[in-house]
Amino acid sequence: MQVTTERQGNGGAPDQKEQFQALLVRCRNAVEAGPPAAAITTRGRRRGLSQERTASMLGVSVRSYGDFERGLTRAEPEFLDRVASVLHMSAHERHAMFLLSTGQEPPQPFTSQLTSVPAYQLALDSSVLPGYLSNRCWDIELTNQAFRDIWADKELPTNVLRYILMTKQARERVLLDWDEGWALPFLRQQRAALAASPWEPGLVELQRELEDVASTDRALRKLMRRSMDDEYIHPNGDTRLINHPKWGPTQITLLMTRPLDAASAHRFVWLVPPKPIDQMP
Image (cartoon, rainbow, N blue to C red):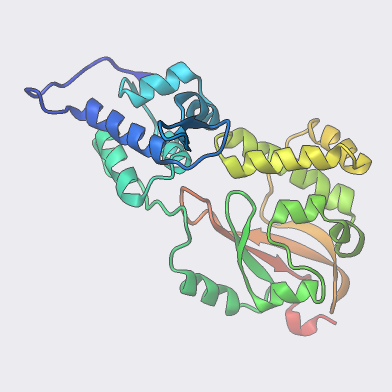
């Protein structure tokens, strides 16, 4: 962030920096949080994020965040969107933050929650290919019947990373070549995602769960160590092996869209078999 020291007074009325600070403090204090992230109000109820916790979630120093909150620094749109996500801002609050900080409209809509759910679901249901829609934290929010058919009588995954890395049935019955083909690449993807968004609570919690499971899972612990040796960013067109209940053991190609929104990074993912569906067993 580029530091600036100018101040615009206007005869006693709050200037832009003061309005900006008031907005961020109000949003920060409104975040519901449990210990140790929260401050304790006079009523003894834990509520709100401290500057220290907010800075930690954003991956910046306390001093840097304090200067930012007081309007003493300029920030790129990507950082402003990270702030909006961490402080659980509404679309109106995010819009005001961008105007007060940059003097410009936000670059794209902010949707921490899914919008146009019926349209997204229709897009999935209109395809014969297995598909789902997930967010930045790997949560699966929408699926189609072709995707649900893969699991048949098995429990349907609700989070991509938890399923691949922490579910016994995935390792033993569904995902073939689990260690090299699935676990190792996804461990590297999680590391890259966490490095890019250290402020995202969902990714932080996933990493904590991984480390807990790895403490008693020797295979996963070994793969986590190996994942530190190389970088991996999932390219479109990657292939994996899967044991499909109808097709049997087969190769699939993973295709995904670009993020649909800045805040949650919702995206469609499609599992494409090696032949047209009507030619599969």
